[in-house]
Length: 444
Image 1: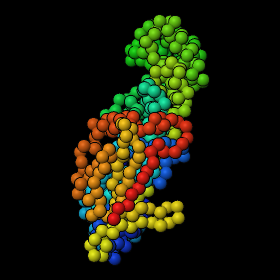
Image 2: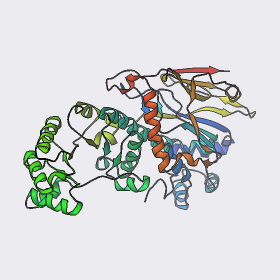
Image 3: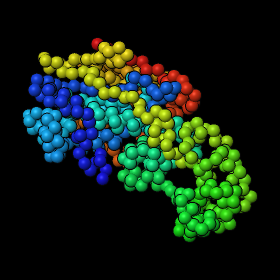
Image 4: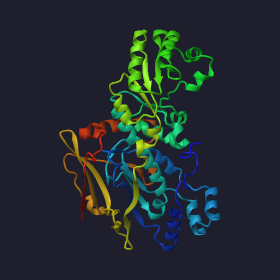
């Protein structure tokens, strides 16, 4: 079962969202029109940019945000909400509108990556679901993007399923593709999102057999000479020699999963070429991150399998995104910009427009224009600015352009194109400030 599409997502939330709903229904403010925005106050320490991911998956999850009879019974049994609220929840469907950054689009501090508009009642319930999806998926996509840049055109593949929650692994595989990865070892992700699947054999397969040669013979008989053989269970040198003896010059490839990967890759490449297996590829694994991949840039490596560091955001497992009310309907029916004033957490009032400016084909700044509904309606986009917000849901209807397999591939292309437009410092793995400043303008 895929919990985001085959079951209700209405309890993937925090209790206070339901208690706020209950109180608002009682005091008459639940139907006030509101605008919530998702943004991060800062990127992970030293990161130059982030990559937006998760919106397509989120649209499916919001569609499944419909309390079941069992969900309502739980809320009633725990006395979380009143009988009146339970009756209201029986017919809950999100009927508002959502816009945001495209998946694959870079984001920066204060970028309004998602805007949710509707009544307070229907919007407040989505807070935790929205943040849990966008925070994790964007963290993985951001890490994946850095790894792909470090790989310099060599394919990166997701092998992180065993290092995270079983469903987080599926989400991570999807986000990794947005970040530029080419495939996944996770079959559930491959099935759900129509991704290329990879995998051959682990060390236990070699250990199962009476000799390494027997294991290699078995694998080649099963999958053909084009398979990839794992060569570091015992002696790498002996394993490579045996692999070529068994498969001949048509051996597909070998995988290295331990040791000094740079020197081993050079040793193995020389050995393979000497033995006539000049077309055999070398795949390396073993707890890689973007720095380890960069360190292998001069080694004769053909592809990378990345696990733990991918699914944990390479040290930044969340983007610290928040979901804040920025505008709400007043008692007289007009829209009123609102903001927090908390020390260190102050927010900018009013809904936002987001743009990126360019000069000579390179992005120069992120522009956030804030203001009331009327003021923004009259804003004229300056020449050289590109609008960043796209409509995901309009009056409860999901835009099909942003869900499904083709949308996922378009998101990967968007990341590639947008990254090429950023200042060259975006490709650096050294710690530094975001490569684009976020310039916020409030108009009346």
